[in-house]
Amino acid sequence: MGFLKIDHVTKSFGALTVLHETNIAVEEGEFLVLVGPSGCGKSTLLNMIAGLEPTSGGDISINGRSMNGVRPADRNIAMVFQSYALYPNMNVGENISFGLEMHGVPKPERDKAIDRVADLCRSRTS
Image 1 (spheres, one colour):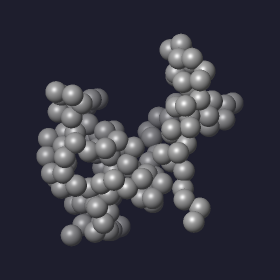
Image 2 (cartoon, one colour):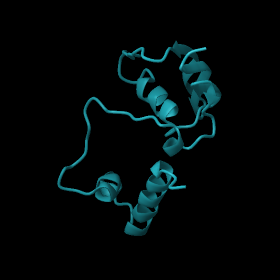
Image 3 (tube, rainbow, N blue to C red):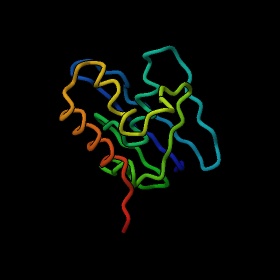
Image 4 (tube, rainbow, N blue to C red):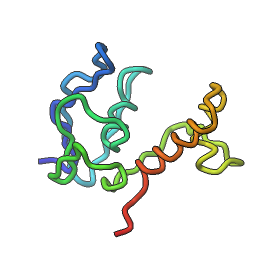
């Protein structure tokens, strides 16, 4: 059993399957490096491990515990992007809503999106 186990994980967006029964086992203390061309599913897999994207099938477990249905804040996982697109002159909410604003999304919808993302990532205080 690996510390991180990805067991037959599949991800589909509608009729398009982007990850086909992916299997990976990583022991505690090991490094996992994902390389490949743009669009091959690297970020999608990392988002699923972090809980930011649900799997379409299969199971992701960390330290023997299935992460399916576990909130991102409860996974004790973090990601650092190779090239981040955050604006240092903006707060977190402004960074989250910036792309939506550029696409003309009304402010009430942007505010709801900020709340959804904050709720998704918020840690429990109990």
